Image (cartoon, rainbow, N blue to C red; front, side, top):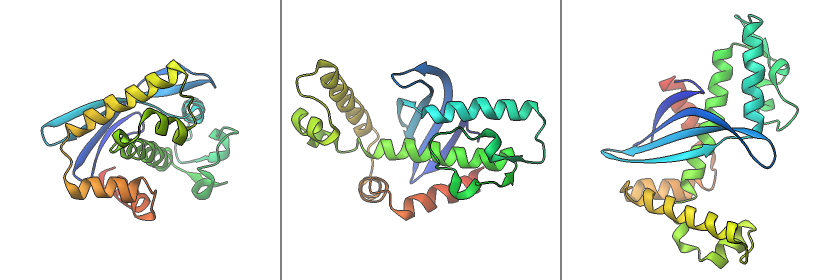
Length: 193
């Protein structure tokens, strides 16, 4: 398991990821991951766009590795001047790249799994509800295309045949971003890394 490629079992589902390329967006270039989600013999695929900050972190880590930070590095050496999500655990500490990799995997999986949970019942939204809820405009064709792509992903998720316990966990714990969700991801990374 690495940030760039790995897999993890989570609540009976297998999530695997692979960094495939970078893509220029409206706000900058970001990393794109190919995600495979399996439940037994049922599998779906998704493309996941990670944050712009993570791409900058990846570039800074490559530079750090070239400077031979074998026993540890200071996070302030690699942290971009953006989102401070790593500050809680890493501020001004020295740590190995492996430990930092675990932190990055945590945030990547947190985003992937949370994103997945948001699509489990998206079919309950009419296009109008979708626009009202997520700040889109009803008279914008691009926004309608986004809505239709969300419905396609919803249809794909239905083929995974989630059991009731899985559905309830993703809808009530993951989507609500409860502490149990955070602890379970961290525990699974420690176990599987």
